[in-house]
Length: 366
Length: 227
Image 1 (cartoon, each protein chain N blue to C red):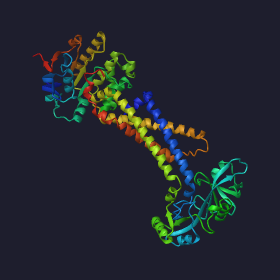
Image 2 (cartoon, rainbow over the protein chains, first blue to last red):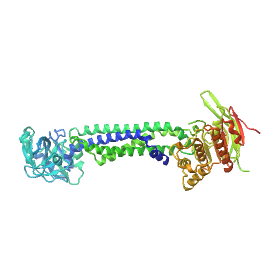
Image 3 (cartoon, chains in turn red, purple):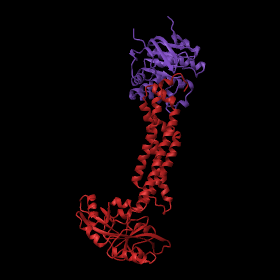
Image 4 (cartoon, each protein chain N blue to C red):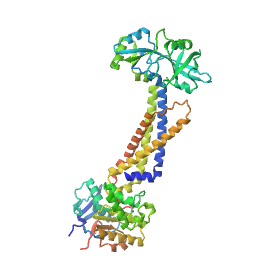
């Protein structure tokens, strides 16, 4: 192992090609992962902020907030189901938002809600809103009067909340009456009946959540109740987006493994004579393979550090409209996957190293 | 009288390739005493490499018995042979084959490292060997910064690192001029005598055989051992 480390330290140029390729692949992995996380978080923040144990849709809505409608009677039935602790209405309206002093119209998701959570205060007074901090970055401040939709319904910002966007649109959290007014004046076609909501947020009192969800659908006979994760997965495009990015990231990890495998396969060919000599002196295949693995891991970790630094630099220059978000968990998963790819790639040389005959060190000028 | 460094009894090595059968070594018997240097000469393809490989526990004979320093190698597993080589046999290869990115001292220590015996004692031994081989001042140099003769001396030091009973030299002077070749041969002979190890030296260089105690010819796998 010492020999392997010394080679890395004294002949770093030898590993520059594979190291350079891995730096680029790490940059790509972190960039893709950052995009996926940015898209995911910015699409799902509103649902994650609800702290819901269950989300109730009408069963003809195909799990879409915008198509769903829950009547007050249905809400009462849900509230009476055993295990249900609290029920609150929820409704969305996706509209343009004018920020005072800003020329561009921002994208907003006006959310009418009844239940506060660890992320959300209890609903504000009529005509007021808790705005997602993204709008602060777009130039809004507490006390600003936002004009929502073509009808320019006025909402006054009374505070900011974090990570509450829906489908890349900044969350604007309002009490139900305000949400209804926004819909009535801007999107009368989407307006739900008086007292109705698009869906319900349910908190469960410690009972088995899956059983309670089943009981809700059984009791109402007209709802489709999902878990928190289920409701997130039902947001349009989320599943497809996750699957697509995960596939691209997976292929990139495989490419990283192939790059390492090819490099060390070539390096092993170059070292056949040296390995034969070391085996003649009592070196085992295990020791030699371990050396290759150590080198592959060191190259991978170094490439991760350099690729990570480049990604952090890239984050500073990427335009704000690209939803790039580098999460610590993404960095860890990238490090782990690249390291595993490097180990597996290094192991490709195992067979060749095991088959090296130490007798070949004699009688040749290798 | 102490047991010989190497004893070959009726050793045969046969290679088969489809229908073809090649007898690389044919009933070879040879005894090499401790502190004896034997030169092995013969044309290409005569079986020199095969004999050296079998004596060095790198290759198993088809028939016959190989005893190195009292240990019968017959029936040893591949792992046992690897371990035995690491402890009892030293090699000096034709192309020297030092590890290019290690210093002279580290090239000696690599033997101990491969055998898992690297400790303070082996480091002291490496320093002493380098001093004895006249390389004390060059111990921190990598092979690229050493002359051909110095590299060959490092290779000899590496072969002696594990305190072997038998050292096998494969064309040790092939890449050296006459003067350097003579120096290296004197060094080899001196170390064989001084340390009481048996040595077999394969060579094409007739000018160097006078350094050996005996010269044995091998032709078509048969040894011509003088009575």
